[in-house]
Image (cartoon, rainbow, N blue to C red; front, side, top):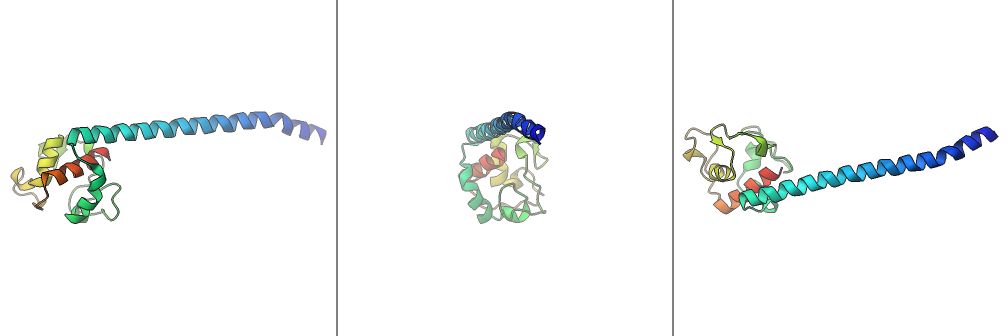
Length: 140
């Protein structure tokens, strides 16, 4: 009995140090994830000159979420248009335009001017609203 008690008491510092180390590692990982998200958001805003915080309402107003799967937007699980997840990493927009902020905004505003047979409708969205959507998409 004495041996077991001695073993438990000698392991306590090891367990405490181990728990502290795991906590520190988790904190560092979360801080790195938060920093990366913040940098991606700041970059998206700078590229597009848009406000991603307004995007959710705009996506719903123009029906984007009915056709597209859009990360982070409730109910945006459409299968008609492309999945917009990871749009920032793609080479092309809709398979016809080089992926740049200005091209994305132009596509959102007037898709038929780039691809006359596209299924994406001209919605009447303003350039300012399109910049907000582009900022959101490049941040997610």
